[in-house]
Image (cartoon, rainbow, N blue to C red; front, side):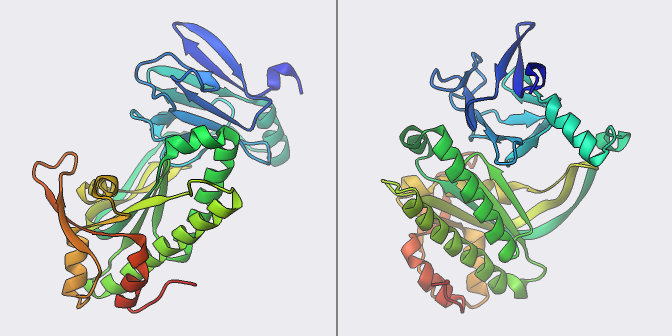
Length: 333
């Protein structure tokens, strides 16, 4: 390959372009840490901000690692592993980075006869409605510790496999949207009417059961000690749901307080010493539907951004078989 066609990141630093080749590895962390493969001096960039990954087909993706200020590709914040094409602009903190890989662009054009983007690419779409949903947020525990123990390449393979399997699980159980945000997974289920609450809740909890099975499988596959663990938050409420983005790159998402609160509930798992935290509205709708023997413990916890302590319902994952039984089902063996 011609050196000029080799993949690299071109970073604009104080008016000067600095090139970082993407070769010799399959994953590169980007951040302020001196241990990152690509170290950037910017106060708005997290120590481990993002990761560039090379897949088996030779393509590249960028993944946000739960950074404080987010990662952006072509002006849009990324919430899942985002494929990169030649010329894509990546914004981290105040720095602008350009993904440079003309060889892949030339090959794609030759193979497919693709044409330059049309004006439709720049059209912003917004097709949304206010909908009652339940949201599940699952977060990987001790992600920072895993990065130190496993190294970037092994961690990249592990998280890629986890995200891929999570996508299959969400699809199998009727999730209408999913996001991969750093080391978290978000999924939503629509409630067309109150009569569907129990059936939809079965799908949500079965999803959680299957995700736990995958986590246990990955623990064995990668001989992880301590084991791979996750925590979960569940909430129900109204949100604005629909497509945003551009004509060629639509993004199906849910926005609103009920979604934001789900992330806060998941974050409460650690201080409460539990695996699962459910919001008051989720619990109320289930009890109103006649499910009154759920093995949750009522607690109150301060959630970031909420002025008063919130009532929440907590459980550990070993209670999931009892929960599924109460909902009229049982987790897959």
